[in-house]
Image 1 (cartoon, rainbow, N blue to C red):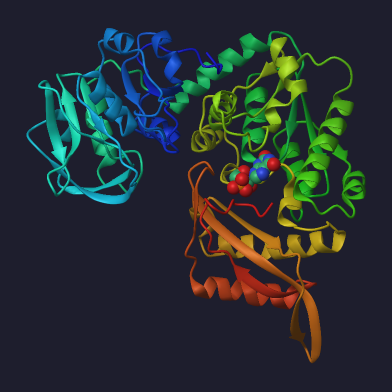
Image 2 (image 1 turned 30 degrees about the horizontal axis):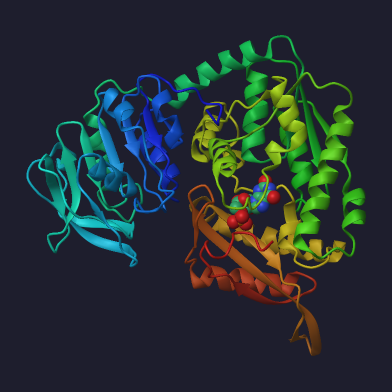
Length: 512
Ligand code: XMP
């Protein structure tokens, strides 16, 4: 296994062929109330009595020399319902004796689904839009294959082989497939014994597991004020373990953030060790404008300061690593593609501790929204549970060019205005993340009767599922106007406001 999840009996095992949507399949299954985990294709024979199996889509063609294969005998041996999505369906068609035709042309976007016959997969599903993202298509079908849905031109987009094997060419896990969730639900109905996923039961199991894993050891954990580390700290407190929580104020936090974090932890009775090291960070960053160099300085300094405070031998380090991080690290390890960034939870020092059994990651099976649900159950204030994600390097990634205290002040003030207005107008909880970036290029303007030569800021608000992809939010013009007027009137050093209308990909959420 290349991640730490041991297969669980009667869960839904999702086999990852590398599609950008694979994590969404796991999420959708959990949203439907069942436990699901992701596995690599080579892990298929190692599953532990799965309740159902889903083969994901993927970027490869089954014709590629290095096409990813599966152990079909093992798959059949489980005797449970199997759903192949996109590449997964093409693979099943090949395994059942059909063929797949290669195409250089990619079909990407909406198509019309027309269910045929009375397959249980399409119970209650009407003709509706589905989302396609593929090149190859199934060609010849074996005699045992049944076409259970086509597109509007009569081309097969969904197949079945006997009672247990189903294939769909489109992506039911994305919201653009209008009845995708119902199709997944119908598939899961074919597996009566599936293990339910309920966050409350999960919480109790988690507390018990933490107590057992910790034994009598002291647990050190870093706190940032964000959702994950707060939930982690409160969970450790609830488990009654001996904890030492450390908060690093690196001077790159938002307006009032440090004070707010400290006062919240005081309120809930968790003693925080605060490391006020702003000067150290800003000193080392002075004059540095390369984004990667800045990241490295911040990352290394953070670790130095943190480990210095920890001092001596660590008995147990707790981290708020989430399931997408685990998956990402596992797929980075497997992937031939270059790693874009090493996850900060997987630096060598942590890996060493992990090998010695000294790392505790209680949230490593949860998605962000599930962590939020857990946070609510633990009684954490809603405005903390629903906080937008905030990057570890803080405002540094929103300050292209060299960082100065003046620029940070402008970003903080503009950010406070933007976030404040989003909250006031009920938009804060509707967006995944919103941020203000100070653009490192001066523009001419007029302030009062004087010429101004100052920086623009860019506002960005995105919706996303776990930050892998993102779309910009169509905020009302009146709201943008109000924010813009306030920023132009109140924030020093800023004479222009822009609204970022870039999707991710290709743009990332942060500017650096
Ligand atoms: P990007 O900019 O890559 O960001 O689209 C995706 C999500 O990750 C956050 N982010 C980070 N979080 N350390 C973090 O803990 C980092 O170095 C970092 N860089 C980006 C970003 O805010 C967004 O939520």
